[in-house]
Length: 118
DNA sequence: CCGCTGACTGTGG
DNA sequence: CCCACAGCCAGCG
Image 1 (cartoon, rainbow, N blue to C red):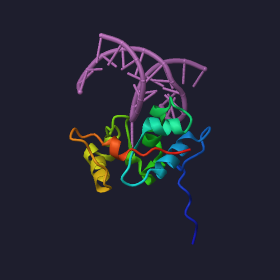
Image 2 (image 1 turned 60 degrees about the vertical axis):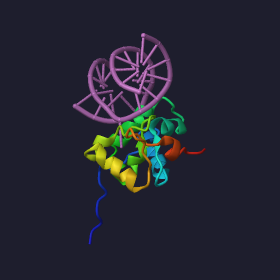
Image 3 (image 1 turned 30 degrees about the vertical axis):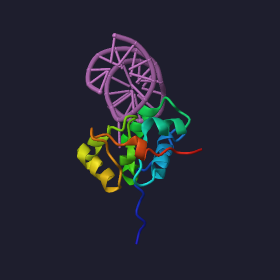
Image 4 (image 1 turned 90 degrees about the vertical axis):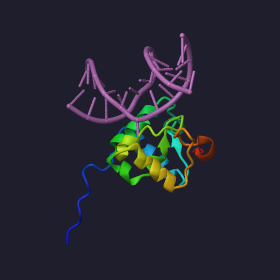
């Protein structure tokens, strides 16, 4: 039998490995909680890179292996919803985990926000 | 090397 | 509260 070749698309340490670190943080988000792009960026020491966090989730082929549906914007909106086919999919995944929503459809951050600790 | 894009955010009206 | 604008900066063609 031969060994299965690793997918060429696997994550490469680019530069300081920003994208990789993003996924590492995402992996830490507890079930039933969410965090924001900005918080992840800040925790990585790059408070101005919230947008790049979104880009990392969007482009990394490995993103599918992480609970990236637990990342929302600063107001609790599911800004990445369409990456799951339809925002309802992402919302349902969160509901299944016990994440609470406000009447207006945003995640209840006061209740479910998780903040990484140094 | 250059210009455009975007799963963001803060500010101001 | 909603909207428009302007910084932000890593990827990608």
